[in-house]
Image 1 (tube, rainbow, N blue to C red):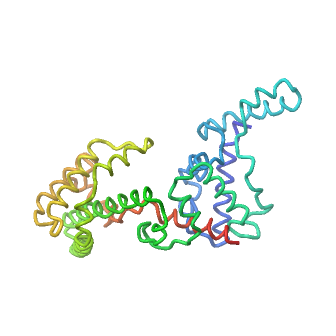
Image 2: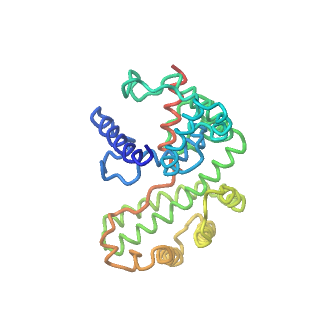
Image 3: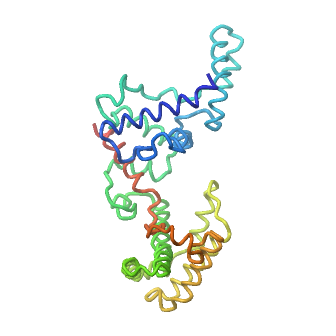
Length: 325
């Protein structure tokens, strides 16, 4: 019943999480640390994705799905007993794709958590129908295992379309150039805390970042930033606040102005980072509030943006291994 399903789903997801942990799985298990206090469950995380891939046909939210189940099953029952209700049921449609492979009788099944060939082929079929131009679909079709930490480090991109290569180039440029801003921020926090070890660590990382930026100076100087923004704004589901764009544009301007020695004018860079944190966090800004500075754990978003590639490459490899069985 609709009024019980949310609770039932939560219990089943906790049960599955515990079962996976008992079998020795940990990496990628949602709820491995939080347990029953988990705030966002897998069903809500994947809800949009299974719609995008054409696996879910129901168009509403997860809560809408729960609330509509009673009526849905009444209509299905009516369809069986009253031929004149078939048309109404036809308009309602199915909630889920009819071709979903049957689950194993007992989880995780003889294949463990590895995809069977049928499951892998089903997923690829859904991607080809619903997301034929996506980077994910195109890499899977090449059936080449990927292993590098960033998409642009994998030779598989040489076999992609010019359009996808162009998007990857924009992604790499943005990821590498903006990384410096997060390193500077953490360096400033370490200085505020007078932590010499952290200051030295981030100083070293900034030096490495400078070398990387300088080595690709010609590419950055030829970067079509206007086209980069056109691509970013073409993603209608993503909202980019004007203040965020102004900060990014200003940071890129400063870096490109002195690309072989970005820190020739440290004051300009430090002022930009200080103002950006104050703009975003207000009174909670660590650089201006000792109470919040004391809560800093020594690193704050200092990893380079990989666009969730660490997760995506596992999905790609799982599907490819299934296809090759």
